[in-house]
Amino acid sequence: MALYSRQLLAFMAVAQELHFGRAAQRLHMSQPPLSQQVRLFEERVGVPLLERSTRAVRLTAAGAALRDAMLRMMDDGEAALAAARRVAAGETGLLRIGFTPTAAYRLIPAAIGAYRERHPQVHLSMTEGNTAELHALLRQERLDVAILRPGDDMQDETLHKEPIDSEPLVAALPAGHRLAGRRAVRIEQLAELPLVGFARQSSAYFHALLAELFSRNGLTPRYAMESLLPTLLALVEAGIGAAVVPASVGELRPRGVKYLPLKARVLLRSTLYLAYRRDCGNPAVPALREALRQKASA
Image (cartoon, rainbow, N blue to C red; front, side):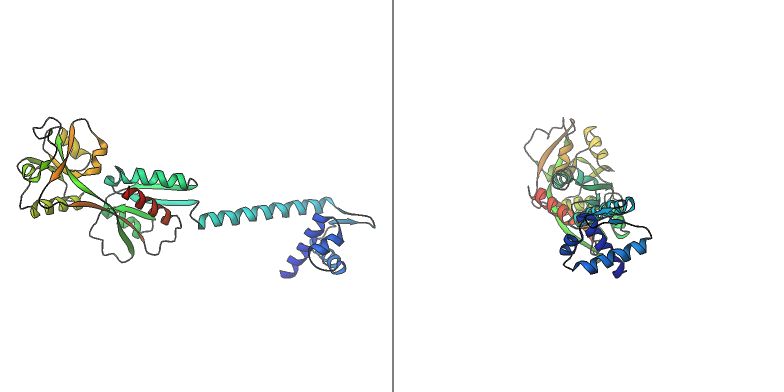
């Protein structure tokens, strides 16, 4: 194979220079061994590739076809190498992102927008799910990265997890409620109202977070109903009750809901985590991680 490569290299030098002397100089060798290599290559191919005379060297039709084909292969090879380098640098390729619904209200649009501006050649695949579903997809290697809430799988050693964003909790009230015109709502006032809470099974993180919030303030909430976003906000708008939600939910801005800061002796924040497999080899992940960090701190 090495001998064949040397013969091919000799032929290509002559085919491009159309002069044995210049081709020999190009390859840093003397002319007789070069001529021998080209003749051996022609014998291997089985057809004449060059027309030789005392004045000039010309390519036969077969020689010209072989030269052009090899040049195309060299161009394609360089393009393939360049493409491989771009993928390795995280500039192209596929990035599979999972996210919880509440991450889509503020952080995801801002971070993905910034990421796409800097890496327009990376194809993004977006999957929405709850924390348990996203954990499963990460373990199955069906996602490269996920933006999710803390869950029962936080101790999974196969995944790297880091807090990427946190935000305050706010009160959500029907627009016509007697407290809606205030600058803030005390948690004691909310505890006296019927509330719309987060469903225990489907929104375990927020269900537990609100239970801790009221408990640490020495209060017991009165839930009239439990649901999921955005249905929860529709129930607030309908007057079923008030709610406590992450501040970014206010980005939805439904007309019939008023969001107010929450006042309490103990205030809690909701946290989003970035998670990916420790053995994740996708080079596009670090740039997304940086975009998330920048937009979370903005």
